[in-house]
Amino acid sequence: MQSPNQTFVTEFILLGFSLSPRNTPLLFSAFLMIYLLIIVGNGLIFILICLDSHLHTPMYFFIGILSMLDLGYTTTTVPQMLAHLASQKKTISYSSCVAQMYIFLVLGVTESWLFAIMSIDRYVAICHPLRYRVIMSPCLCGGMVIFCGLCGVTSALVYTIFAMRLPYCGPNKINHFFCEVPAVLKLACADTSVNDQVDFILGFSVILIPLSLILVIYVNIFISILKIRSAQGRLKAFSTCASHITVVTMFCVPAMVMYMKPGSKASPEEDKKLALFYNVISAFLNPVIYSLRNKDVKRAFLKVTGWGRPPE
Image (cartoon, rainbow, N blue to C red; front, top):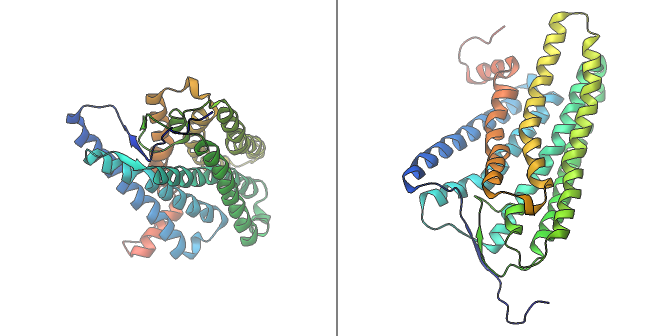
């Protein structure tokens, strides 16, 4: 039972990365450059998809949503991380910590389910190409994105409520670069075994279920691809699938390791590396892997900017 005189923290201190002061400017410059490239890359893709009618297809609609999600959850964490690297003050208020945790989870869970929806889009495009536009109608695509968003909102709400219902009476130093559930739970002045169970169950529903769906869909896609007689057609189909599988692996596997392991087995330094990978690195590489090397996107870029002749 909690003592009536027990005090609770009103702010947290984010310890960030363990490095010498001499290396701080280098790390700041690196993350600033990566963040600016994330803004430019994902922002450019979204603008091109909006402006070029040739990109008004289900696949690019989902890629545009993915770009906005990447921009959103990196903006939730990276600017604050840069501010803490540039100054001695590394505090964040309790309410801001809760808000950051919730927004990050909403966008992250939404993206996890969006990857599953994108695999369905690839399945229909490869296995039912003649009916692709009919099946993947604007209404269905919009409905699937709304479903992803609702999953994100509800799952994040459960995660956040269960994490912040616990008492936090000190210490208030979070060994992380942002307020992520596993790192914050280590400061709770109560037993977190129930939270470990909730995190595992929710991790199963928001990570393992989408991954399992993606796996089943891609087994069917590969079976269909092997039936394609044209070697060029098989190569093109495999190329599209490889891009999606790479993006999914970079995001979902580190997130699954982070959120489905017991808190007692968590290593702060390993957790930071995992979070950095699915929070920053995946958002940085997604435009390169998924869109910027795509001929349709290059053609749209040349058309919108008027630079040179679009490639044939």
